[in-house]
Length: 219
Image 1 (spheres, rainbow, N blue to C red):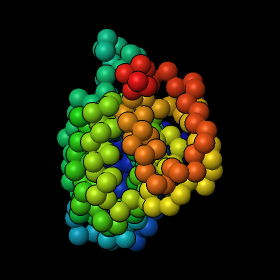
Image 2: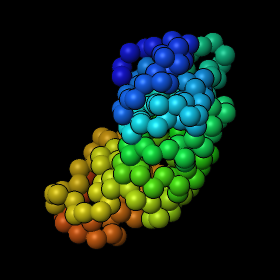
Image 3: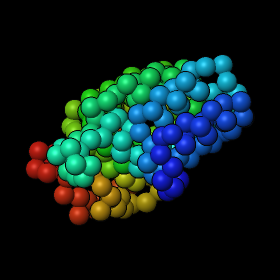
């Protein structure tokens, strides 16, 4: 990850990878967006070696994956996200039929609407063990939908800025989420998790320096 490759070059690379037996692909922070998501859907849903063997997919820090445009149409911020879900929806549909065990969509500017196809996919992903969704403005509604999906999943960890175990006890008595990019949606997930047996060890909780949380989620 962390190479600004862009969609055109990434699509060419993915074409070359479709007949390879990769088990892990990290394209985090590569400047990829909607076209790359669509291409990944093609590889995951088709009869390719890639789709049959890939187990870990890291698409984190690609904030254009559901569309990104300049509010003032000058190719500068502020940016508007989530207006082009075509590639994303196709990728989530393809994920539902995959045997992937690990997914990372942290920092992809996913909102509650774009989270919906992912939560639907999770319900059908029996092999999915790890999901990272931190630093995304999913909102309280998105957080609640993800909790519902988690309850019927086989997930072992959900990463909301820091990983939370879902099948075993938390290893420490301190849950430090300070400055972890948490927002209202991640707090909804954390609030539910704290009621589970896996959080029984927690005696200290730190949430400082997360200005996106706000009063509603905190209350």
